[in-house]
Image 1 (tube, rainbow, N blue to C red):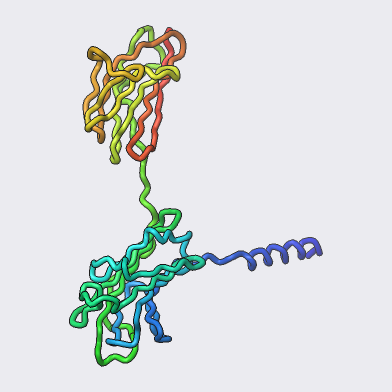
Image 2: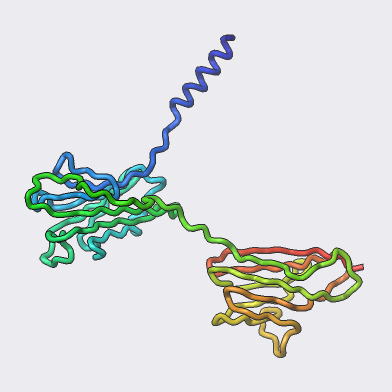
Amino acid sequence: MTRLLRVGLAFAIGVALAAPVLAEPRIQLKVPPFPSGTFPNFSSVTLPSSGYAALEIWVEDALAAIQVSTARIRLNEMPMTPFVAINPLPGGVRVIIKLGVTLSPEYSLRKDSENVLTFEATDTTKVAYHARFYLTIDPAASVPRLAAMRRASTPEVVAPTVKLPPEVKFTSTWPTRTHDTTAVLVADVSDAEGLTRVVIEVNGKDVEEIQLENERPVRKRDGFIARGSLPGEVVGDSRHLTISVPIQLPKNIIVVAIRAENALGLRTRIDRVITRD
């Protein structure tokens, strides 16, 4: 092995060893001041009746910075917002749930039945984090411990939902060449989030606009509602429109396009090309 090859190999190994290892997100329940009071997500935990003033949920090695404003903590479905403090950490957050602050039983651990403590939040990339802990008070217990019962876990880190743009389909057959001066444009436009605007253009110029108002299509020319009825028809609602309108074809190459926009601001544009002899 040549000296140059040995140096190159050593450099490659050094870079590989120096590269950071990406850790998986981790969510745990901690019961201070007990040294062994740390439990993984979705655990069933038996707690002593005293000896701690708060419970803590730690999120570590998050994929991005947790947005504190999105954090929601509930005890038995009751929002615990007045009694929660959230401290940002490098790569996560520390959530402190104070107990015994109020005499109201709704904000306290029930001693005669199982309690469910839940946490949810999103990070700056819209990834969602979920945690759930099942807590039971045992007056005979001196330290927190895992209960024998096991719970089915659900995904604790959920990727953001992918939102799709509107779907536009030409349903009429377009020839590549024609002698006609008009052609009937037939298309279907649909969107799960709700359409807000559909535009028909010819050679880059808008010739008709369809706006959805109170779930009904309103056809416009040059930004104004036409005084009389426009040729063709547009039927449907914000979820699905069927368009059938005649298009004037100028000479030479013609590009007829449909642009659609939904309530989330997502857009789609498709076109067809036809040459008029």
